[in-house]
Amino acid sequence: MKFHLVSGGAGFVGRNVVKRLLQTTKDKIIVVDNLSSGTHPKQWLPDTTFREYKDILFMGKDERVLFFETDFRIFLQHLILDPEFLFNNYGLIFDKFSDVFHFAAIVGGRAKIDGDPMSVALDLAIDAEFFHWVCQHKPGRVLYPSSSAAYPVNLQSKTGAIALAESAINISSGKLGKPDMTYGWSKLTGEYLAQIAAEYYDIPVVCIRPFSGFGEEQDLTYPIPALAARAARKENPFEVWGTGKQGRDFVHIDDCVDCMLLAMDKISDGSAINIGSGKLTSFLEIIEVFCKFANYQPEIKQLLDKPVGVHSRYANMEYVAAKLNWRPQISVEEGLRRVYNRALEQNI
Image (tube, rainbow, N blue to C red; front, top):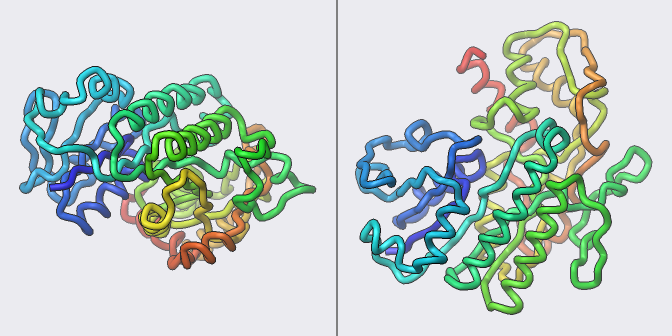
């Protein structure tokens, strides 16, 4: 029986990975999350049956999901101090984790990134603890989620915006640029640790740089579900942060997970790939689509005092298409339709 580890597994991306592993494998999955921003597995697992033992929940009739509600750093410290911690305390018998997905992080939307940058910088501590443990435990494979925020901000301005290719960052040669706030710096540092783990400790690692992932289960601190909720309520005026002319590369979470798993099969040297659509879409265009779904034409109210981040951030997907033969299968409009329908169902 294989065991996988998903840190931050109750967050938006983490829980979608957990559900995919349940669908595609017969393996056991250890989920660690302190629920500071995640959602308890009782609310999103298809089978909410559970058995409590000490401080762990065995979820589902087959007990394939094992949920630890704790800070991931505390969990790692237990494993570092006692490599047999899971056997000694819970009777779990396995040699090592097969796949490790590391989503634990201080997360939030633009307000968090700009409004509390020192809190976000704690991601540096989380990642340092993580890779320290990885190089001791030597799991079968590791996925490290970096971010498009790692790219130099000067390539994302009104006058200098380009499709961001993986080659815009080259840690080995020192080609870095200035990332986006402490969040971007922490992710760039995590990529460096991933390359160290691969080169010096022979750990199979792949890094991903997701752009603006979205989906039906994302919370309202993120722009797509927030805009969908406003359209579902037919708000007028319709509020948008900034001018709304700023653009992002939106990609549905199902496509993100597809690309992650494929990348783990194909890449092991700690290098990074983009995950995006390769298309720049402004927030005004997103609002236009949602209002078409809702069949109304509101006045747009610009909230110019709100943080908006860089002007334009979108991916060059040529490398991924060539190396992995991967392209997103869900169009932006189809993904937005799914989010809008969910907003209607929830009657927000």
